[in-house]
Structure formats: structure tokens, C-alpha cells
Image: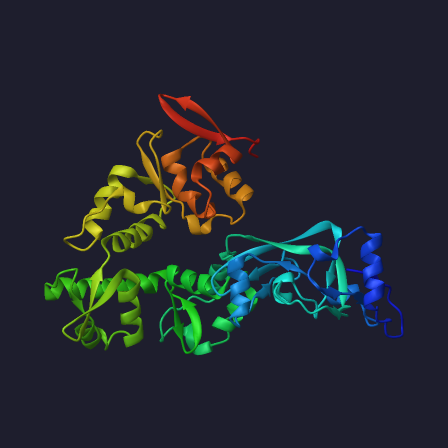
Length: 401
């Protein structure tokens, strides 16, 4: 494609004879080319700073083609990410040795069509140029800020003094979309994981003591009514507990610790044994720095609703057992409270314990794995392995301060 230099006046249109002469000089056979010729020229209004290029995978291209948006998120002190409706991508500038030209009215060979036999000359203008583009790579959503914001003002119930003052931080969905570097679907999923709920249009996380109070109301009612844990009727729960707590909070606690289903037009909940046992374990452990393991297991089993069975595997990512201690102990270590950055996460873990088995460390790093990454890959990168008493253990590759 011949290119004319930019001038203030409109570029001169090339004739067919000039095009054929150029092809002859370049030793190109016109019979091997499409009959339509595009003669490029620089627009008088060209400005390289007017355009930025994004390299998109087919899935993201489709998002734009069907009318959806991509949103760049990040505050001034953060590295920008770009989000679709359900995914988050890192943005990184990539340089190219070839100059990239922006030609809005240019046509591809497919658009020109090899079946067009009529000789034609087009004169598209170059609107801009660049020697770099933004490369997008799928990344984990940065969701730690979500819990941080919610914990600024945990919900303690409608009658608490804090609610009457109403001067504390509260956030809407739109606020989180502005502040959190994640897609809308990833944010909504994490709000569900955190057991957050909307109160008067604002997202709130329940104060843990208030959450346990609500759960206790429900489990006591289940016991007094002799209901099965897999068939807890919503309507009777609301009717019986309504004088004690708001209907919305009763339904929210059932949704947080159970699975809703319909039977003959009535809504029921199947309570999740693991979630209930895990919450009660957290309540017991948060009041003690370390707990004798055998004593904890006895107290824990006695504290859960009758008919539920406690197991240590219910506490993965919430509590850590130290079997090298005599007697063996257990203490609270919640994965949600660990750093989001890979390096900082491993640094924190190896400061807590020098050597880990894969079974012990896995619940604390599996959320760091990308779609195609496995736990073993992370351990190879950040830890070195050795054998101890017949078991493979991992310790830090770097000195831990």
C-alpha cells in the first residue's frame, strides 16, 4: 500500500497509472493481487496520543461486539486492571518494532473480496499510529479491600447504638465497583462468600457476635421443634423468631448456613453441617490464642447442635493444628486474613511455621492459583522441599525475618 506523507492540505489522489508503475518498481505481479488498491495517506489531524491499542482475546472481543463494556479499575496508587462482566485482567504495556497504523476506513482482504474483478482505487486516511499496545492477562480479582470496607462498620442489629447514630461508613454496589479491582460478578460472589447482606440499600457484614446470636436462634428453634436439619421451614422460622429479629435477618442467616429449596409451594432450607460447625469453632477459637487440641474437640462437639458431627477437616483454611507441640494444640488462622500478594502470603506463612506439609499449607495458598496453575507450581516457586520423618515438607526459599 503506497503511503503519502502528512500535509495541511488534502493528499493528492494517485492515478491507476501511478499505482501500476509503483507495482512494477516493486516487482509485484498485479495478477497475484486483489484488483482493489488502497492508497494510504496521513490525516492532517493525525495525533499519536489520541489512540490506545488493546490486544484482546476472542472472548473479550465478543463482549464488545455484542455491546457490553470493559471497565478500567484502580486508584492512583494501584496498578490498573480491566474488567469484563465476570473476569479481571492485568494491563501491561508491550512494545512492538513495527509501527501500528490506525486506519478507520481501511478494508481487509476479506472485506474487499477476491470475487470483485472491477479495478478500483481507495484512499483511506491514517488517523493515528503507535509502537506499543496494552497486553491483557487474566489475573485474580483483588478482593481483600471488600472485607476491609465492610469491617469498617459491621452490622450489630437494628437496635444497636451504632445504627441509631448512622454516621459510619456504608457502601453500595456502585461504590464497590468504583473501589474494588474486580468484575461485577466476582464482587457479588465474594459478597456472598463473606455472608454480606443489604440493609437499607447498603452492603453490610454481620458483626460476628450478632451472626452467632442469629444462628443460635435458628438452631434452638430446630431443636425445640424436632425438625430435620434438611427440612427447616422458612415461614415458621420467620413467624416464631419474628418478635426477636427482623425477617430479613432470619432469612439471611438461613441462606448463609443452608441451601434453599421449594417443596409443594413452601420454602425450606437444608442446613449445611460443615458451615455451622465451622462457625462455632471460630467462635471458640477467637477467644483463645492457642487451645489444647483434645480439649477443643470435646468442647466443640458439645457446642454444636445435637445431631451434627464435628471433624477437623471442616476447619481447612480457618484453623491450624500443631502436632509437634506436646500436648497438640490448635489455633485460629483464617485464610481471609492473609495477604493477597503471593510473596507476602508465603512470607507470612513461613513466619508462622518454618516447615509445612503440602496438606497443611494447601488450604492457605489454593486461592492464589490461577485457572491453569496448581499448588505444586506455587510451592516449587516459593519453597524448597525436604524429607522429615518420612514426610515431604516445605520451607521458604528466602530468609524469613
